[in-house]
Length: 345
Image (cartoon, rainbow, N blue to C red; front, side, top):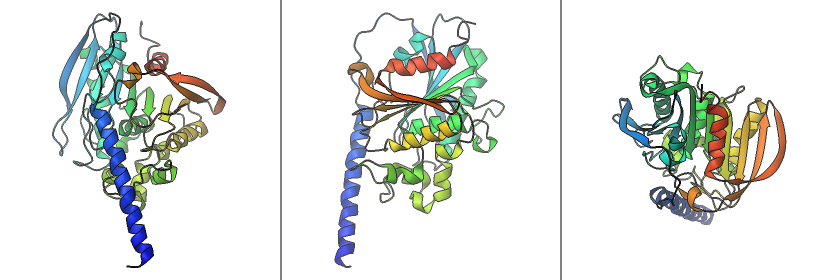
């Protein structure tokens, strides 16, 4: 082994160590939330837990928790929450306070799990979240849901799947066999929180000091695909939301911290640019100083609003970038605009 090879091996080992440290920090963040501060009185919410929506051949039954606001007239619009966890850990309860944020405002909120990449490789995860949307439509009449107003909100790996739900809803080949085939998996609005959008370019888009995926078998994309993206270019492209942008899609709100060391912020820019080129409606919010995972806890409710730069495009036309701030209200206003138009019908 020559000196250059030894140096390369040391550099790779050091990078894998940095990867592990960054991922551990993220996982610890998933598990650490603080009690929320006092809030104004709000309508009560009924929570239906452990509702089995699919029973795939691997991984056992998949479940969701459904938060239903009480005393709300008419069918309630639905927001599906998809947690992050690097496609390896997608447990219910890893996210913002769904009941307080939106269920108390009249939305039905579904907290959905999907199979870990340790149990099933891609595209099992997409099949699972599509099955969840179809299931919700199948019980819509019984549960008082508005089957025509379904939004999806995801964090990290969940943001990646949320984007794909919006971009592949009309593609029968992507549905899988998770049940309730007579119902649509299309969604009417999507919030993508810092999800990977172009897997073959994740390493190219990383920030200095960020995670390098294709040298590390422990990295999330490697685990999702069963190997490095360079060895599986076709599969990596299929798992990339940018590959599925072919025309106008459901409205997107994309948020990404400009200090994200796990998923480089250029990944969200790639999706925004693709949606712009396709004539879709999209808003990209760059959150200044934010790292990865700010949706996976109740941090937005406990910290001062973060400064942002906001980019928008609609029908192929962009508006000038403008300053803003990030709060949970930004997400709520987006869903209000796109899902509550018939709320009082």
